[in-house]
Image (cartoon, rainbow over all chains, first blue to last red; front, side, top):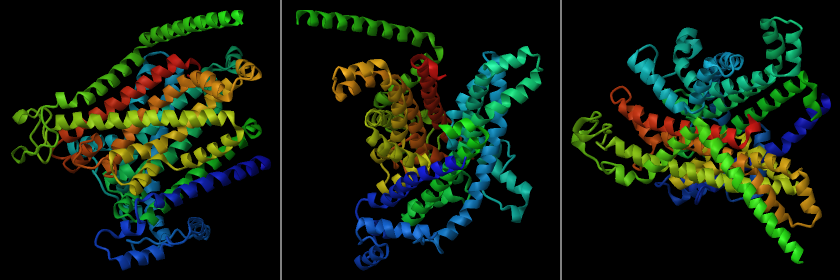
Length: 315
Length: 297
């Protein structure tokens, strides 16, 4: 196991290198001088030159990269040009609403997706299966902004049940109000993932149901409920947990859309505002942090699976 | 010498016949698969609407009419209503289909071409494989929506930059799929036989491996097509995709969000168009996968 962990950590180095290089080079894709682009049309040449030097853009490219990396390794993500405070502080403040929203989204996707996927697998080929599979196709084809708009139209405009936008902190407004505001964005964000989880669960359970040891257990007279819960579910769990884990990451990345619709002050909204203002340091920092989270989550998932399934370690 | 040319001619005849049979079989499987036929029809209709938009659209999608601001569907000759500037929604949706289909096709094709080249050469040259796959790992570690937004931030919003950004996002996935498929083909004995006969690597890669991975590649391309339609709409919705006043489903929906309490048609119709296009392509992709790649399901 230690050997496996070591190998996995070693394999991370090139990935992180590529991620950091990509994000570093992003700013150099800006046509013309990034400093001029940031300051806008009304800036004087002196202002542009000053920012140009301050950003270190006059240094050779490799040196700029090393300087940037050195800063990152010290845990310094830079300073926002347009907002008060360091990027670290800004990110920390905006991370909370995004994580809360992502948690609601993943919980919704898993709580609806896993049971439906199982029902579909058990009733393979019958009406229930066809209905659920159709529903999952609708799910994976429903972009979050469309789902979000639809939910607002139905629950806020027509039925007037839930608020159409906004964010309430738990500490200030309490759990109930917080959840009332989080429900629609969470469902909108998690809907595509729900479709994927239905599909994955269905095929994982189907594969196990047709395995030899299942037929063996059945012929030994194991009850249907026990057969399903103890033998099938346990073995299908790896596939299901993988897709649930991955859905957490795509929700984190896709939050920009729902945060815009529902006006939630999370990192997605932060990124978009930074994009509009050409606050490149903030854009780079958000992309970097979310990608890092992605890499770490994937690693934890893999290590967890290697722990419960020794075969993975040997691959 | 005479003998050899004869053999070759016969061989190519047999090969042609086999290919024709395979194609006929695939066509029969296709038409028996109701899902695939339905998906193909939806995609075909969308493509036709996009191509014929100038003919079908009842009005100029940019023509404003202050008197008819937010005309309801069916009112004053606006079949699907009008937006805040009195522009005809139906015409805007039809022209929006052009944007979606252009982006979908361009990204689908470019990711197919570049991803396939990367996958094929990666499977054949181990050193290149290590480098390319690390790059793909790195690029896919960045969540796709965020990468697309960041790329649009630096490139500036225009339909060409949307295509560039989405191609960068989707090429790594295609490279992975085609590499995986190519690796299994490369293990086959006939590839070994070809190599021992001294066939050039170019001939093996393009003449023998490429045609055999085409089915996996086409299936993935259809998913990339659907996903890039979604992402383009999302980017335009967020204001970093196709810039106004050029209509795209995403930016029509973004205008609709501002008037969601009063003008439902600004959400419902462009939303339905987006959902239908994506669903059609996804269903088509699933059907295609079942036909071309029966083992994958």
